[in-house]
Length: 315
Figure 1 (cartoon, rainbow, N blue to C red):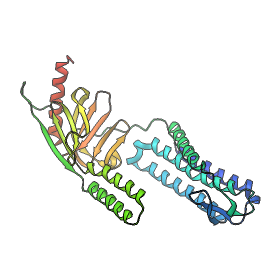
Figure 2 (figure 1 turned 90 degrees about the horizontal axis):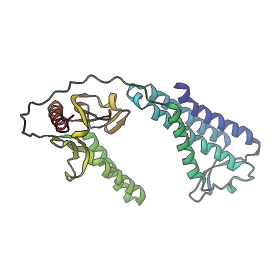
Figure 3 (figure 1 turned 60 degrees about the horizontal axis):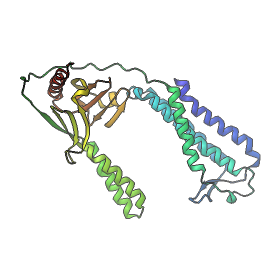
Figure 4 (figure 1 turned 120 degrees about the vertical axis):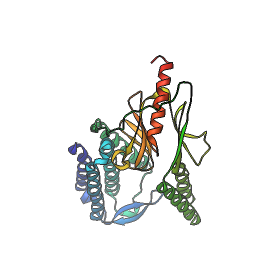
């Protein structure tokens, strides 16, 4: 796995060096190294500067991805980290080689032009490299399941119903959303409206996750933002999809690699903090988790309702 992860950075570094060797005697001095929106050269530097930047970025990014692959919390995402490494190496190597080829045989660097098709081509090459990396990485390493707290049932008399609901908030997400929104306003004052729209949109997407209401009732498990109308749900898991529910401590970083809506091999979760949480095993074998207080009670009620649903269906 280590060789597969290192390959794209070594390949990109080697390719840049070989291209330089092939065109070195035909390059102008200085080179055109930066281009304006219309493709006109507006920045210059030596070939050594270009090589230093390109090779330095490849070495540093390769070291970063290599370090991340050693972190236990990220091991479930190993195939995607490798895919990201392939995409990054291609995304750095392509402009390095492209710049050398564009300067090849040009008498004066100011005459160099960047055809705009190179931009979508660079994105396509990076995506293709990422897909290759994901294919070569194969299946993620199996992770031991954390010890669960069992699957208790709530003693609920036949014919009666009950409901359970709690709200959980994340100050970290609140701060992140406010910072993004404030940054958008600040950039807007400076006149950069496209950036303002992007930052504001991201803030609007982040803030609903700052506070969520988790509900268990005869319909199943529902997770909805406490800041939006209740009919706008973030996740609904009906009873017929629930195999078992448990309440146990969840380690946000170790198990899910961070906070927010997380996707990992075999499941997903809305993780707003470390601590008590509900982990639902679905009928297809995947899991869904949400961190919330008094998770054991919620899991027991959910198991009771799931048992009733299976009984009605003859299961």
